[in-house]
Image 1 (tube, rainbow, N blue to C red):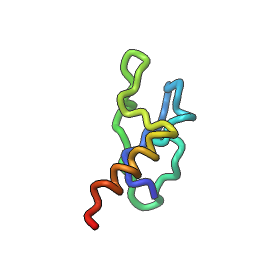
Image 2: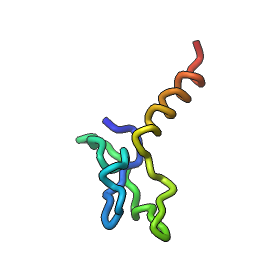
Image 3: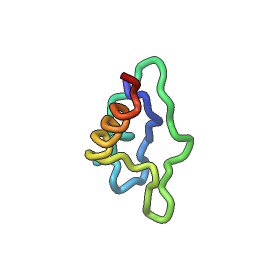
Length: 65
């Protein structure tokens, strides 16, 4: 399950490269954007390939040991 807010990607030119669009949705619970966050051809919520790696590193840093 993707514990993120997902995007339906309608009209987005980079949706196939965005984790918020390509990741598998939860069958039972999933958050979705009400409207795609695309403004002036740019998306502030874009989650590219490297973003997951950065997110994982931040989680490792912030997780108490």
